[in-house]
Amino acid sequence: MVLILGLNKAKAQYSYAYPFGKGWDVGFNLGLSYFYGDVNDNKGRIWRSTPLSGFYFEQKNLMGDISVGKIINPYLHLRSHFVFGSLSGSSDELNTYFNGHVMTFGLDVHFHYLDYFMKRPESRKFKYYAFTGVGFSSYNSVRRQISTDKFVSSIGYSNYGNTKTSNNSSATIKLGLGVAYHIDKYWKLNFESSLNYLLTDKLDAMVSSNTLLEGYGYMSFGIAYKFDLNIHTRNNNWKKSSGTNNKPHNSGFENKRKRKLHNKWKR
Image (tube, rainbow, N blue to C red):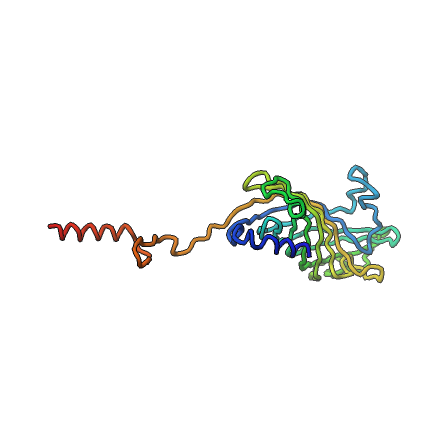
C-alpha cells in the first residue's frame, strides 16, 4: 500500500519527468548466498558468528546477478534481474549435506522510503530503499551423507548424482533492503541484502514436513551505469513551415526555388 501511495502521490507532479526514454540503468552485482531449509544447522547465521569467525564462510557460496532498471518517479524504481549461483547446506544432526545451483529471473520494485517520508531532495547522493518482487527459479541439487559421502537423493540428477539431467522450477518471492551511492550522473554503487523464498521443499533434495518454503539469503555489492534512450521519430528531421498550413517541408530546397523564381520575374 505504501508503494501505491508513493506512485499516486508522484503521478501528477512527475508524469513527464521520467518518460519512457529517460531514467534507465544496467548493473552487475556480486556477493554471497546462504541457504535456508531442511539441510541446515544454522552454523553460519550472522547472530551466531561474524565474518571474522573461521566457519562463517563454510556454507556461503558465490552468487551474481545482472539487472536492467527504469525509474518510474523519484520514489519508485522497477528492475528486472537474472540471478545465478551455487547453494549448499549441511546438518550434523541429520548426517547429510547437499550442493546445488539456482538461477532466478524476476522483477523487483524499489521504494525510496526516506525520500518519500522525509521529503529528501532527489539530488541526494545516498538513496535508501526497500524492495520486493516475484520471479521464476530453476534449480538442481545432490544430497549425500557427511560421514561416508554416500549418495542419498538428488533433484535434476541421475547416476547417483553424477549426471545432470534437468532443472526443477518454482515461483520465487523476494524481500530486501539496499543503499545506493550515486557517484555522478552516470554511475552508482550499491549494497543489497535480500531473502528469496522458493515455493518448494525440494531445493536441498530433501522433502520434510518441517519446512514448507525454502530459499536463500543474498548479500551483494554492485555497480550500475545510468543512461537515457535517444528515441527519434521520422518527423524530427523536418522543420515546420512558418506559414499558415504548417506542413513539413525542406526549408533549404524551398528557399532556393523561391529565389530562382524571384530572379526570373525580376528580369
